[in-house]
Amino acid sequence: MAQNNDTLLTFTVRRRAPELIAPAKPTPRELKPLSDIDDQEGLRFQIPVIQFYRHDPKMKNKNPASVIREALAKVLVFYYPFAGRLKEGPARKLMVDCTGEGVLFIEADADVTLKQFGDALQPPFPCLEELLYDVPGSGGVLGSPLLLIQVTRLLCGGFIFALRLNHTMSDAPGLVQFMTALGEMAQGASKPSTLPMWQRDLLFARDPPRVTCTHHEYDEVEDTKGTIIPLDDMAHRSFFFGPAEVSALRRFVPSYLKKCSTFEVLTACLWRCRTIALQPDPEEEMRIICIVNARAKFNPPLPVGYYGNGFAFPVAISTAKDLTTKPLAHALELVMKAKSDVNDEYMRSIADLMVIKGRPHFTVVRSYLVSDVTRAGFDVVDFGWGKAAYGGPAKGGVGAIPGVASFYIPFTNHKGESGIVVPICLPSASMETFVNELNNMLAPVNTNQRPQEYDLQFISRL
Image (cartoon, rainbow, N blue to C red; front, side):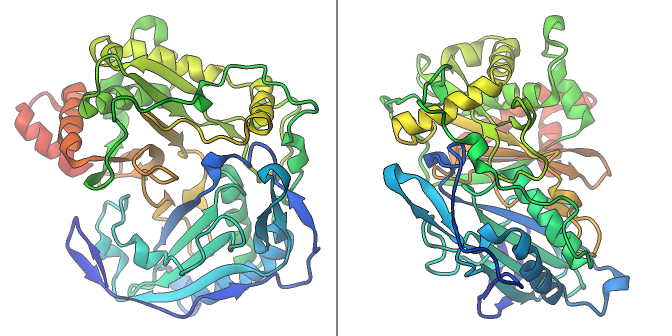
């Protein structure tokens, strides 16, 4: 039984027994090492993605679970490493044992319609554990299936496609490339339009390895004041930023920083509001980690079809006092500088650091991580039923340390406004302060109303 706590939507999901889907044809049996960008402690976890699809009259005689199951076996011929299992070699080096065992697949039915989820199809999805079932014993990093897919049919003829990926295998662009190929095969293609390229050796550490850049994202930081977020009483909320909200935030940007991107101004704003909400010691160092897609920054660029991880975790650092008392420009400049540091040499330096320092986790103490998937293309993945009504990460705060990460996800609200939805995970006591701070920054979005009324309207549209 699943219950959506926000709307009191209750429904039952009936699942068939999980099955392993192997490649439709024999595939090479080999050991394939991951790159030294893939192989870091901070990526050794499972990441959930969810796609909602509407009923399509022209597909009424098609069972989406059958269509996707058959396409999955075919696409795994091209992406056969996904059908293998990870193992560790010397010095914890991860490699894929291409066994062809297959990926986990679950067919399910839910006695609910897409419409019952409401207009705001956005994280958090409290029913996620029913729509993406954690098959007992399947969630490990080593020796476990690298992908789990559940297709849940809905009463309206629509369906939900949910997927769990071992993050060491792929990042968002790599996963979308695989999902796009799966969609193409589901619609009858004999091969993917973009053929997968393994070539993880392109991002192996140099010999000898040498750290040539500063990587504060991997600093060893002690949690001296106990400000790691408590996990026992967490609130999950999503916030919508359309053109009006982004314009309101840009009022705080000085003229010399006007060229900043929406990602940069939004990140600076959330970092500042989140810090105010958490009320750390004023002298504490607060960190913001920006996921930067480095695919085009390599020289030469990574080949088309490369589906491994190709991003960095550059970090900006400020005292809590400076973040909360100085103008937004302070946080904004730090975010812009951190992003601009990422280039080919920076990425080579990270790969070398992984080998030299034993594959450390990025620093999570007093850190907040943001990842922009607005251009990743989850929402345009098509299995024959058209584009997704919602496509992207299934929740914020995923990873080894819940509550640390937020995704920026493309979203169209009930008014037809296109914008960005950001799931935020904070201790319940801090969430109210966070909302108030955000409202204060966004107040000009509707100046004709008294603030209290505006607060209520703002919260309801998020």
